[in-house]
Image 1: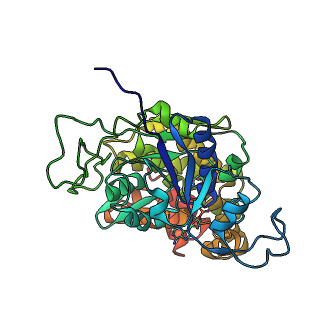
Image 2: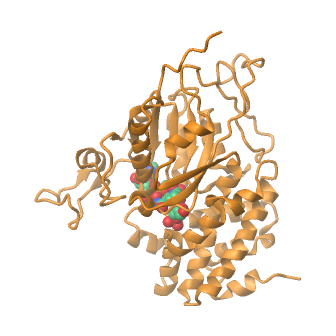
Image 3: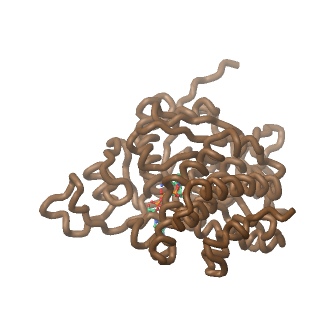
Length: 412
Ligand SMILES: NC(=O)c1ccc[n+]([C@@H]2O[C@H](COP(=O)([O-])OP(=O)(O)OC[C@H]3O[C@@H](n4cnc5c(N)ncnc54)[C@H](O)[C@@H]3O)[C@@H](O)[C@H]2O)c1
Ligand SMILES: O=P(O)(O)OC[C@H](O)CO
């Protein structure tokens, strides 16, 4: 039988509009404009609405600028996110939308780029309101820990929305990418094959061809959701087409299948970056920083093998941008590193530094350190991850940054 060509195009929504969210909107909007046979021309960007004033040093500052304005309206007027990504012009096909449901309406590709603490609530607002065969990519760095265990954010998104979710992570400081300075990233996208001989049982969430969504079995005993096939009218979401959504001349994408490795690299490097900031804040120099990075990378690999053994590949950590490379960039210029360093230098809490210095941007390392610790404690394995445990103890005021060498010393 002759195959009909694709008749529909993918509509893309960016769920989030912070520093990285707005950068993703920019580069994805450039790509949809470059691949008009695959994607609809407009990219929706969900904005968590707030009042902002245009900073005095902004090129958009004028006589009226001291009055607070709605961030979403300002983005659509001046094509810039003056609060979270200042001085970067967004393509005019990025449309800011404050209604999360409306922004995702009819979208077949949902790109989640929210600080991880807001993912669950965002998903809950979308349950039953999205295309049942939509696909998602999580660009958020963090993990989801509950009394049931630990879950990747891609799993959280996938299971709450009954869709497949992959992950994008890499050595990616947003402001550099927004300025179109070269960087690499890793995208993990590996939906299970749909088994056409196994239609969805009556009453199950999806209504046509399905298969298991849950990419790892990290939460034992939990019911796996089922995946609905993308209708054949849409262009296939092959690795080739997913690459077309993200790859830019300045943003080089490598596609893999290891969602767990990509997700854990992005989450755990934030704990390592805090440790690097602590020792740098003490003025201990680059050797000390290299030491905590070495131990941290080993703990990252060990964590993956211990808790995601079914799915994680060690080579993802060592060979891809989302692993060692992200540890390196985060420990040189990331917000977690910079805030941890400032906290030590000024003798203030990292939460106070976050409030004062980040203008609404969010650290992910502090909450991840707490979440990972709570999970390790539940497994009786705190001592097996001395660096992760040291960072938690320092945040809790139970240890000092000066204690790090003793705390991470190998016990022979
Ligand atoms: N910024 C980077 O360089 C970078 C790079 C790669 C990955 N990431 C990851 O991407 C994710 C998002 O980071 P970001 O830099 O875009 O965000 P950000 O740090 O700029 O966070 C601020 C965003 O959170 C939103 N927000 C505040 N309160 C909210 C609420 N109650 N509900 C929903 N949203 C709310 C704000 O509106 C704003 O859009 C994080 O997990 C981060 O680790 C960031
Ligand atoms: O600024 P951070 O510490 O949130 O890190 C940003 C990116 O994750 C670096 O890859």
